[in-house]
Length: 189
Image 1 (tube, rainbow, N blue to C red):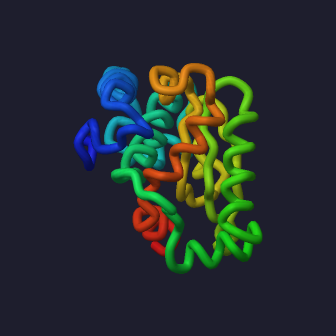
Image 2: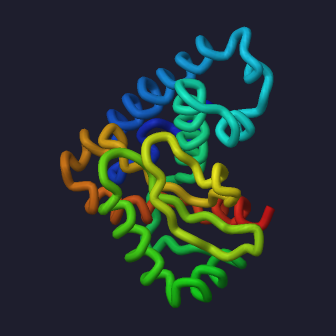
């Protein structure tokens, strides 16, 4: 997917250089790999979400990374001070976690403590209850029947140029660039 903003739009939270490598190299690599794996398989003309729910091996790994990255890159906008969720999502976060600050603390803790590489997710179950999950490697909450709403990438390529080994600092900074209108739309649709 093309970026919905200029490569420098998320600075200083995420640098142009990190966007260049993360979107331009890592995501592009997953797309190229999947495009080479799909011809002649039953997955050739299947939606990405279906592949992630049903495939395995290299096809799943590359499709999962593409889906995860598409959701990740589409959820950001230029940094804003005091950036908070809106609407029904804000109400659900307060109800489920007690407050937005309590939610952020739990989300960041899950992201910081995920061993190895992967993703931390805010998702909704079929009843609309919110949950935070740690998903290793290319996993996505849709594989568990959840609706993925918000994700922070904790693979080192997502933050190492800007934050080196300071994953918690990276996670704390990302709140400034979350486009809560995108997350609200995912929640209410």
